[in-house]
Length: 475
Image (cartoon, rainbow, N blue to C red; front, side, top):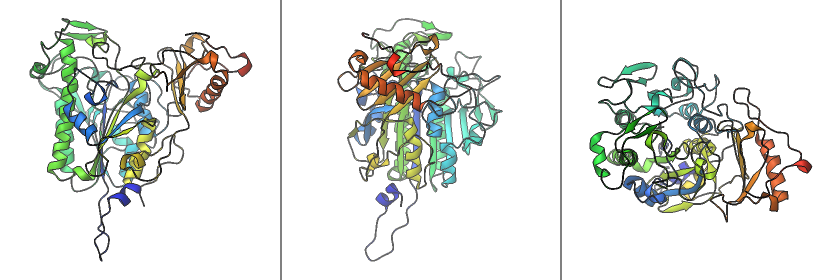
């Protein structure tokens, strides 16, 4: 019997076991939220009281990794349970007239699996895995209800002219061509999420919330700026990279994250009101690391968004892929528990499958984290974690025990392996490849073994020959 179902069943003396419904699952994915932008992960400026309370009363992961360093390929890993060397989508790519390169027709997704397990399935937020007219539309990939942005490019505006409800455009009156408006998209998506919970309260549901906060552009209703405006030095009208400038960019960025935090408070309050809180596992994470300083006025340096970690969004260094994960279910997930074991986005699919009491597909890269969630049973761990990313010059990364191997600028013919000891050097500040030749060779061989060619997203692989391998002597 499924581990969590076994854990939840209550037996009445001298009577048959009480039948219990399958737990609900809510999976929230922030957009470009850094590993240190929540108070429970060390943030000192931005206020996130609801998420901090979830961590205090639940489980916080210190070494959880996104599927990739940018939006679409990270979501592909989440939806398929396949790491970035195996998953179909490995980089952001536009598909005209609207949307991104689609998941292949017939892809087995997390949503399809949840639907097969008897769950009502809903998604509110950003899809980015296939355009409105593609065979990878959210409704065709397992979601009964989709509301939000189909296209990542359109999602760069928090006051869009329209949002999608399944396959229908809903025009938003009062919003102009892409700068400001009357209808803040997060408010609308939050409203739909809360309605979905209320509508589906009588049966198990899987709710996927890939919200777009805090992805630029920096846009937030003026009344929400009050909490931060004037509280710290805020450069005026910072824009750039095609985004509309904001008169108070730091205040806007902080307010956006606090607005997302308030959504988590509303979700948990509704679950408690409906007496679903102890029957619902809520997970909160981010699709990749924080964005580059100055893009659209964001300021990752000022907020220390990646903490001590090196790199930002688009990089396979720790700062680009290590993200928060909080798991919360009162009375079922132990309070104030911290997990330092490395896990990643590929593990969310098998975890949800085990919660739902169904078998995960056999040919995936993920491992169920449920034993860690409920502090019961034997937890399997990864022998290694692997990433590849054709974007930003072409990159590979692999974690093997305490070691992290990184390759950069592969598109320029570079085959130099950088090696870091994450145990003593989590900031990846000192390349120790020249002093650990045997480990470096093992890293190279495993990187080669984890990569499968993908004609749509080719990675420039340079053939590796151990005897001729060129390693940096010094960073």
